[in-house]
Image 1 (cartoon, rainbow, N blue to C red):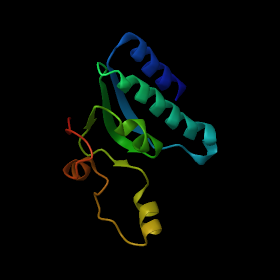
Image 2: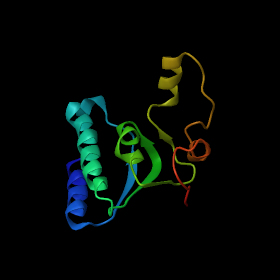
Image 3: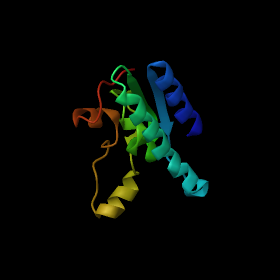
Image 4: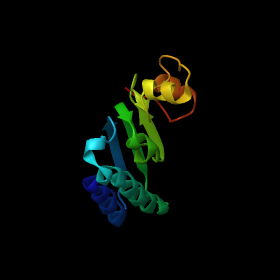
Length: 125
């Protein structure tokens, strides 16, 4: 998280575009609260970066992009692009089904399904 934050700060200070390729299975509980704090830190740096109207942030979602990355900087881009068939989710299918006590459709966390729901911009191979 620290390296991504510094990258965004570097781009902010020099008015450079930012392109982040996201690929994360999410933070693990073993990593502790410090790993979760990084999501907020990166999002804060992204907010400061995007406050400059001349800045441009592209987020590229690859497979998998899940957990805190999906809930934070992965979805904050001015343009959000996904790769074909990418698995993009906040939580896994089993966790969602257990929480909601109902089944969710197969493929509902695939890039193509989410694109048709308006979650991001184009799917690009």
